[in-house]
Image 1: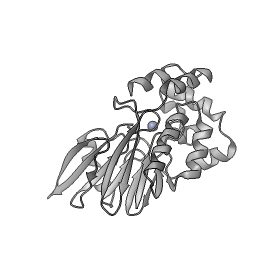
Image 2: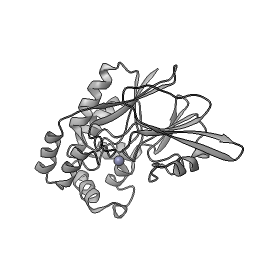
Image 3: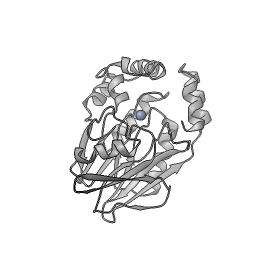
Image 4: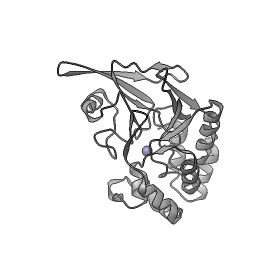
Length: 247
Ligand code: ZN
């Protein structure tokens, strides 16, 4: 089974369409989404409609929960808060109910999925070896897929007696990574709609369950068009500018 994994679309419809076209070319069998469908971007309703229609497994992220009112907007920075408030007025009731119904952590095909981290699915960012290692016991499957940091990267973890050894895995787009069964893995596909790893291209990943190959993919999209849409709907201009930087 070949699974396409997306995360952190953040209402960036143009990036999402480009990623889904690339996924179609790869002839995948399933689409999994790790959350943050909305938040930040100019097209929340369209992105939610497409992901709801296409995703076989879908999580809620902190931004999805904030837009629906399930978590407090006071925990967000002013720009994220402003975007979430604007998006609340854009989403229909059915979509709000759907977003509010999504799990924050789940399991499929013997793989754990969590938006942030397996131990704190809503808020924790896994960006360093220490945090990765602290999550070693927080999932029981060989692989846990995570999003939230908007950075395509991973960690391979092994335990000898009580010590957890953590190895950081840098993203190499297009190069399959063998997810061996002798370790536990945290893997982040990166962000579709707002990459923050200094590569502005939209990011996603594929996982082949038989061969255990994980591959990151990056695709260019029309950032200028997204920036124009952000300005047109009256969202803060920096939300467009940051897309060029991948930050
Ligand atoms: Zn996010």
